[in-house]
Image (cartoon, rainbow, N blue to C red; front, top):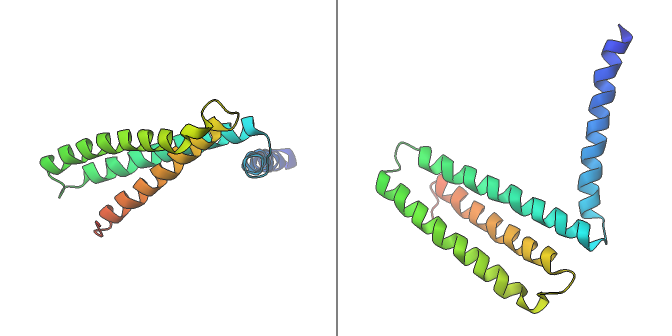
Length: 127
């Protein structure tokens, strides 16, 4: 009986420890490969969140088909802007060891800003 209770608790603590270590590894590292990997993961997570915001907007009954098409067009243009801007912002680092980290950090930061913009739209504060 005690084993049935302790086993889930131990497993939960182990998972939390691994998750905390992953976050800690990303925040407290000087290893550029690890930093790049973390920046890329953060960027991919923010892309998922962005796609979720877009899906939320498109699922609203008061968003018409024209608005949805314009959102798609705007996001396509914005995606190209994001890529071009981050390549521009990191061009002087191209070929250097930290290039990947800085590129993905830029892509993540620009994506997070777009998430904020779309959230404001969702809240009716379109700026």
